[in-house]
Length: 384
Ligand SMILES: *Cc1c(COP(=O)(O)O)cnc(C)c1O
Image 1 (spheres, rainbow, N blue to C red):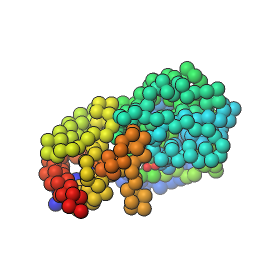
Image 2 (cartoon, rainbow, N blue to C red):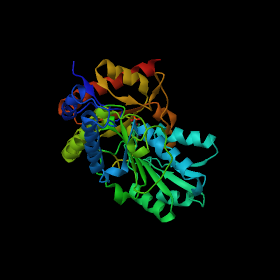
Image 3 (cartoon, rainbow, N blue to C red):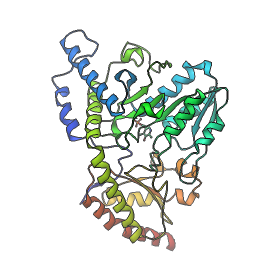
């Protein structure tokens, strides 16, 4: 059977060039980057190179890149780092209702610690109004967090505009850019962000490595204390293999990005049009144009997403439904609920997220399976 992976927003396979670049690190290069001898120097040089590659991807300076253990850690580091390290700035934080749990749950934690958090609402496309950001800023606002691209719908936020407002008002600005990296050209300087989060496994590197962009000169509290790694900002012996992979993935992804985005966008449109032609009562969740080229979030009326996902999985198609699964149960997506979608729409939402390995064949196969599966599930519901 034809195996089709349409869940690239959850994670991506390791790029073959990245896998090749890792080979020496599985045997020859094993030193501790902090060691003075040849073993340490080799490892240290590899990390320096990777840092350059990551910085180059977002047009930052290498010293502005701090390697972390995940996108989630970068979110935590940025947010708690400002909250505890910039106390003089105030006690109020602004974010949106549709952030990744890495951001949302960090703010919930800070609320319990006495910080005041404003969660800005989104419209039916999942977008916030930059005017609302401006209105929410008060004399004690210390930080604004707005994601660049939403992981569930692919909706793109006007980060440049929000960055300009934050800069004018003298408020620090953090953006979770995990889903934007590799899909959108990022010129970090021009966006007026102070902090930005990234993750390796969303750009064809392995899981367990991330990065935080921190604008030059900014000082925030550290999350992890210990040795002097990452210029004393993030302690712990470095995940050399993961870091080398992330660096290499940035270089390769940057090189392929334009061509891949065009190709992936075409495949996504083919899937979208194909489904609309073959299946009735389907609606798009998210913005029709201001969105990532690879993401398609659809509501299939009267189809329960969990059954749909399992039925597609039985036919070797991997997709995602609702938000992340908690203990195997799919909960209605907080993103779609925030967009004011009725709960029956949230219960029937499927996310298709494409990547560099997808082919025309994958889409043809998906289109041969989806209509019949939807019809079968709808019949079952109506006869129950
Ligand atoms: C995947 C993801 C994260 C978390 O990154 P991890 O490396 O998996 O912790 C954060 N934000 C967004 C938008 C994501 O899609």
